[in-house]
Image 1 (cartoon, rainbow, N blue to C red):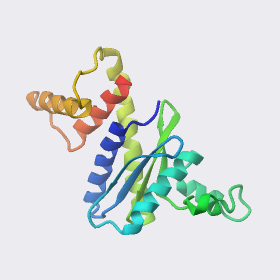
Image 2 (cartoon, rainbow, N blue to C red):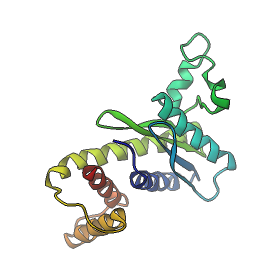
Image 3 (cartoon, rainbow, N blue to C red):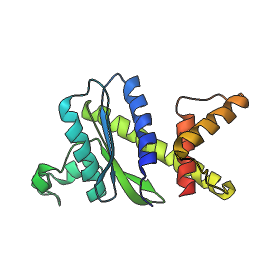
Length: 191
């Protein structure tokens, strides 16, 4: 399985929500398992350097299948990745904010977040990791009962609308990201 553009968009929405709550404008990049950019978004007010840094963090984490923070630890003198930041025209990032994305314990891509301090970037990236894990848990519960794929031009929008309507009708309290998490879970289950 690979990370789809639809899942990346949903995860980016969750990341933007987290960054907004922190009042830190950020850039978020999502790469496939080979480091190719599949989705990018940048919040208003993000530092211009954030764009390239986020993309490079996603690339680094995808291609090395490690967090950029761990790569930084391994890139120190005497460690096994010493000097790696000088490879690939300086595209390898060795500070926090890039994380591989996993489904079924396999790397399907990566996220790179930039715009805040390293700690803030890591916090938002971890929020994405947690959201994807929650989507995967729900997908495993939904998959057995999911029998058909909707025949609509935009399944992501259709699913999100249906979920929101059903939860509203049931007077189920809807958190800001609940419909997004369940939409992602359904998309994962449909794959």
